[in-house]
Image (tube, rainbow, N blue to C red):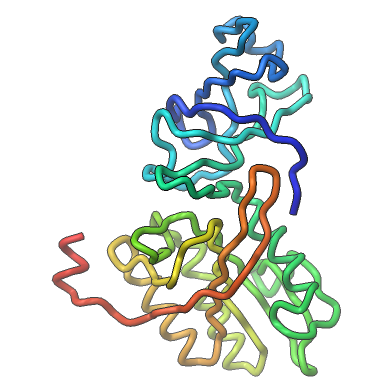
Length: 256
């Protein structure tokens, strides 16, 4: 998926889950009228309020002084000047932070045959009181796919979630039951960067999610992890990444 032209800025601080302060040197990136008086605009740039398109913690990524990439908005009704789309890590790798990107990138990848030939691929499939990201037909069976975006990576291991997720846990358990009922199901972990060699559940944060993935795999749910090529104005799924669902040593998990 493509965003078009983005503007480079410097991250200052995150104010809450939805907003952050950034410094932008591009004189063409202008604050919008509703909050212009509160920002230090000058001819060479200034400080801006932007929307963070990711409600996760992202504490290891959104570090003061980090380079960020911003999508400017021309909507006068908005209270922010644009959206924070990506951040550059200390090692130079670009990480996409847009929580909407995994599903959009997955839609392109699935349509191109990423998980085999699919018929009638569509988004937002409701089953009972739940809604899954995608539904298709595969080999004469219904195929349900739930996408999870992952931005947490350390020493080559990507981990999800970065905070407990009751919704994610519910989806995995429901996919397990749908598989037992004869459907094809998959959990697709979209790692929003390059460099991860393996995906593992974040056992230290939510061991229940790891256990749910193990139960799902044992029932026949496909647990698939993929990385992404990330450029300032683009993100697309690139390659599959190994999945390791091995339970860690209990003492090691507690100590982390």
